[in-house]
Image (tube, rainbow, N blue to C red):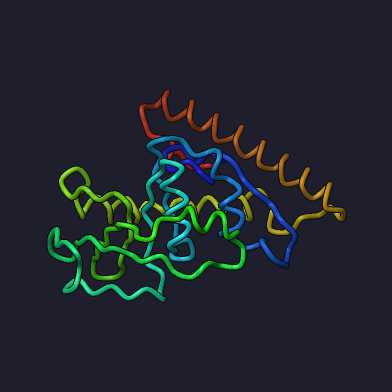
Length: 208
């Protein structure tokens, strides 16, 4: 989980390389406790599903995710039209997934209000429903800034040489990851101070 403004690593989760509850969605659920009221989470289409949206809303965080390819959006049939390629949709609770207990499933809302906005290339799903406070163009512009995290991943893997972990045991691998991320954040802190000194934003300062 990376801060959009500074590029600093806010938190991370690790798991075994295969098996149940090792995918990105499962790892994200481990980080919910670190979300704060009013946070906006950007993510790609992998994270756009009913239960993640519901759980994040319960954590009082909003989302801006690219639409999952399996979800069909027809703006001619939206529940409330907000503008051109901008509308509200009521999603219906799907069947319980394997990872979710029956108790938690029963706590999930039977319907979920979401908003879909579209430009020429992609459709974005968000829980920021107020079109006046959050105009369509700003939602799309915000999502496009998600590309920064891809650059951050490249820095972590390539510049910091974390593409191949060298330790052999799970315990040492976790330590290796933690130490590398600590160094990454120390560099980001230095970049933040430099940006302030030269009257730039942290994203305008190159790590390399």
